[in-house]
Image (tube, rainbow, N blue to C red; front, side, top):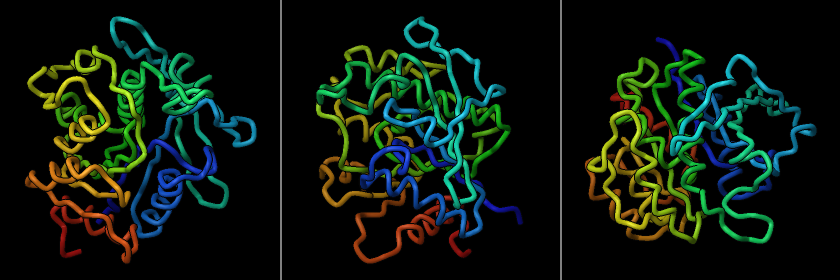
Length: 272
């Protein structure tokens, strides 16, 4: 039997960005899952604080060149890649001059949140999914980490559901405490209306804040993991209200083992 394929769409990976709860998971989990026999691919945004020279990033010309249209504006998609030393795996980076190249993560150098964070997340989600299509790689599992990946479940289930790359894909969403404080732009839900997605497909309250964005991700996921200890109870309560597997925060079990078990459960292979 062929190894299951897991696509990790994450927000942060150390050593490319400073260590955090999210970036350490971004580095360690894909490696642990690969060591369990899975085939993996990993994506993150090419934030402005990623040192391209030190980390030996280079552009993948054959994957770059597409334009992603948001609000009737073309945004060129640039794909870069680097290898984590001694880890036998690559990391793909989604880049764009306007959204990522000269900008940090949720906030700028002065701690001010970017007004277009929602738009940046949309570009990231579409950029990853379009690149995976070009790779002709069909993941069994897509595991999303961090609020920047929160739109991916909606797009896979509603916009890309008939694409060969994602037709049978199951989506796992990991919830983290780290997020953003401001509401996303008032135009955010309109910007999500892509490839047949309608307002009825977006079950969130307006304006969209961090809690509502997480609930949107959970609504279209096949399984949910609480990664941080301190999560808004409203988010996890919503997850438990749905007919999907939910793993609450665990103190004493290996995280990769939990993920492995959940992957098999949502794929209908619980007895593996």
